Length: 137
Image (cartoon, rainbow, N blue to C red; front, side, top):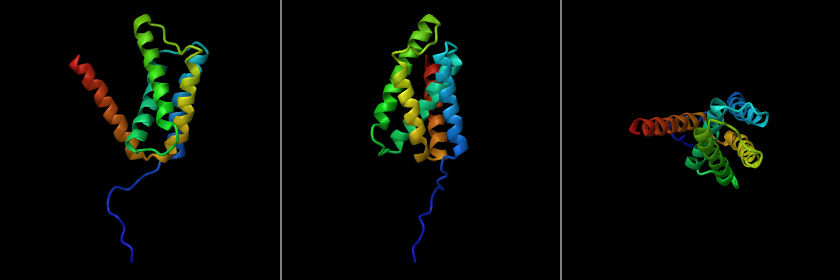
């Protein structure tokens, strides 16, 4: 008789959660495309991509080019943030959009390989890093 491993139960990401992430990413991207991008839309997009990227890194994903594609998207968004912080103008330029859109598409493709607990833990860890860094400044 086989014995089951005891431990945490893996709760897969549901279609509803996938849709929430997709909506945060695509609505922000659409806002950028029509000149309605702002710091709130930027924050939602950056958070979603960063959580998926970090979770995939922790999960040691085997999906080809996932980490590299998401890294480029996040680096692009860091450029957008720097520019937005300096100028007060929040936009994803036409030349930056392909990298960001590729990141969104990759995040959507990969999110189903993750589990809810990992996404939640990753989001909490990233928030702690962000607010911990801001409190030390």
